[in-house]
Amino acid sequence: MDFSLTDEQKMIQQTVRRFVDRELMPLESELLQSEGKYPTGVEPGLYQTLQMKAKEMGFWGI
Image 1: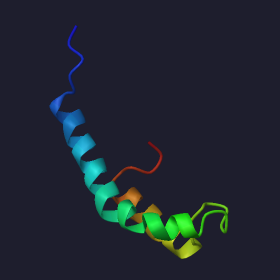
Image 2 (image 1 turned 60 degrees about the vertical axis):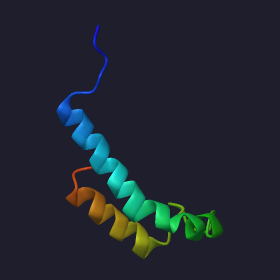
Image 3 (image 1 turned 180 degrees about the vertical axis):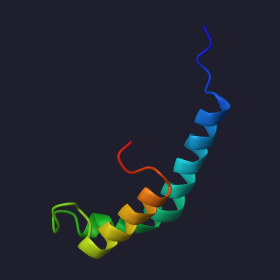
C-alpha cells in the first residue's frame, strides 16, 4: 500500500508550511508573552488579521 502524499497533498503541505513560517513563527515570542491575556491567546486585532489571511488561503475551517 502506498502511503505517500499525492501532488495535491504535497502542495497543500507546502502552502501551510509557508503560511506558518511567514505569518505565525515571527509572532511566537509576542504570543508567548501575551499568553493568557486574551481568550484566543492573541490580541483581537492580530487575531482578525491572521483569520482573514487564513480564510483567503482557504485554511479557515479545515
